[in-house]
Image (cartoon, rainbow over all chains, first blue to last red; front, side):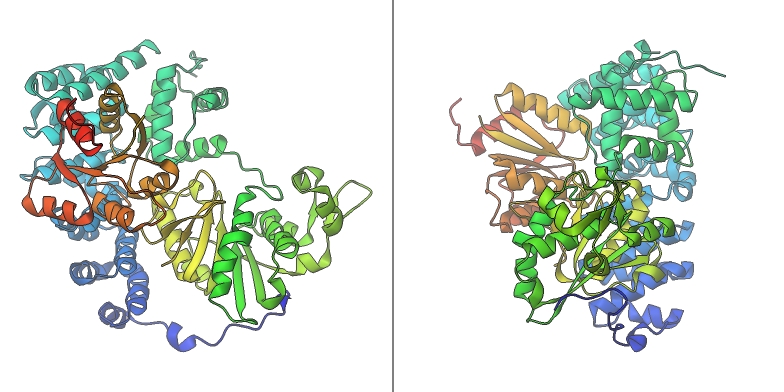
Length: 212
Length: 280
Length: 124
């Protein structure tokens, strides 16, 4: 015993039956298999089929095994199409914290697909959706990010949406944002956290002005 | 061509950079690293012709290709490899992980250990040496050591098993003498038995056709690779590792890395020597 | 000095809570999500956890459940802080192992009172 010598190891047992390639209908059926490892494998392979986004999304509604859910999300991220984004957006309203947060993580990886929807998302009725939209801006490489953030802090009625935007503005803001920041400070004069967040953002901007 | 006017990084710039970098990579630079960080930031500012930290930061943050961020990660991370680097993982292997793995196996069973990236071989060979020196149960099991890298040139180099003084510098002398022969050019040749204990292969961790061949692993070392990956690639890697491991199998990441940034698939296990991750 | 672990993915929120708690005489450390918090908790010897709900990788509820199950981690009271204001969220927080549930943004006095209460420092 001890070390198995390189090049002299017995080849792996024949798993050709388990590994036989499955076609799209079989993979979709496999998402409902009783074995979690089968469901996980099918979820993984469906990443190659953009047309499977609806089937993948549907499985999220009923799947309870964590590692299968993760794989479904990874596949949706890899597909990354407008349809994938469309099926992930409802997860933002889910009661399931894992789904909500995982959807945010994945959507953050799909900025191009999201950018056209960003303005609509930032005006959604649901403050949680608006908070999510602001969270996505954190990873979004788009010329309008700062402008969108400014709009939020000047106009959004909900304290936590503004708070989330302020956190990001601290990092990416410049002196064009000062007016908007002062307005937020006035609008939420009774909220100590918001006052703190505005001051933090203003300090950051002042200091980076000095270093140019 | 804009010449960088700003030659120094202010405290505030450093703070901003630090938070951003931590969020992106999980690597935290404390204040003692100022000199290290500032020097490299100024280098990158010059390379990108940014006339201020602020304009450099905007490039970093908003550049669509993410290329500058990748460059920055490359210069900010120290990627040298040498024998017994981050030795506490090997100690953890001997004292904590292998005993647990072995308790689930019968004598004669296979224990499979995978090192990726192998780079020039220091890591997988360190594992092989450690097992010979410190693991009393080595002879009881059939131990398969596997090592992979995406770069075929470095794989060839690893298979040759010839190392510089610098590479073996961290090994206690009596162990160096036992496993290496020094040639007249001052290079160290690893003995044939240890070399033959490791099977090398070319693997792209993002390619499922490559990674599907790796199954039933008990222990994976993937140190200081994932920091170079973007978020989606890290997810794919985490999934590949999950599928590669036996239930109860372990994975070790580099000291500045954390599965917490990557995946909820693994359990955190704290041993006296190290924090590692385990497949449930 | 009592140690508090502040767990939230937003830097500004962590800074805010840190400032309040330091002023009140506590020592603090921070984590950006539930998994990092678990890692810190192993060594950390914390007396109190301040836990945000919505974090990437591992949310607050999952963190609390794992914390409460982990025999190797020293148990300590936990305040869950959330933007959610619905009843089922509060119930889930308690079921996951929280001692208190608060809605953000929190006022400094509220936070300090809760910390003192949970740390058994009454009448101050």
